[in-house]
Image (cartoon, rainbow, N blue to C red):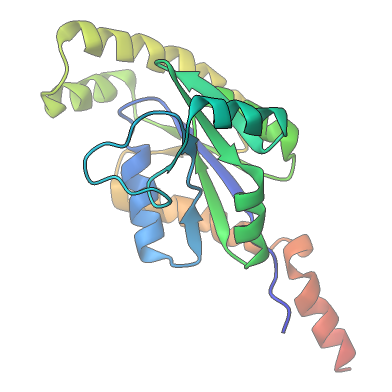
Length: 204
């Protein structure tokens, strides 16, 4: 039996909105949804595994991959290079898996150009005031860092108009449910149901 191809979902958000937590919950509860593993030139942190958290590589090799057009998107962040492998995403989709690219708004724009059929989702906080409170509740950042994150968040939120779907993360359970509904709806599109239609017609 032929398996229908999976879909690619780009998920972006401002820092502190809860994107990573939402994606972790979604993949933990749905084994047919996976997160794309990025390539990076930064050194592994404690407990990070090659191939699971990132594909760790050298700057030289990363640059070679860029020249080969191997990445759907790539960027330099704080002196380190990050990129999403086109081949790895295509392989997972071919297995019938839905693939999440958890990337920033600039990366999302690159993916939209390279992969127009990708579905883009932006995660919004209920308000900037709530976002500020969440950042303060972490108790890990200085006032200067919090101010910078809020300023960056305001700029990133302006990019939300370029995305296909908006999910407001006011409640984790509800936001996860909203995300899952988007994934399921995409599965029900005609282009993803062609095999089922053809199977029924063959049995008439």
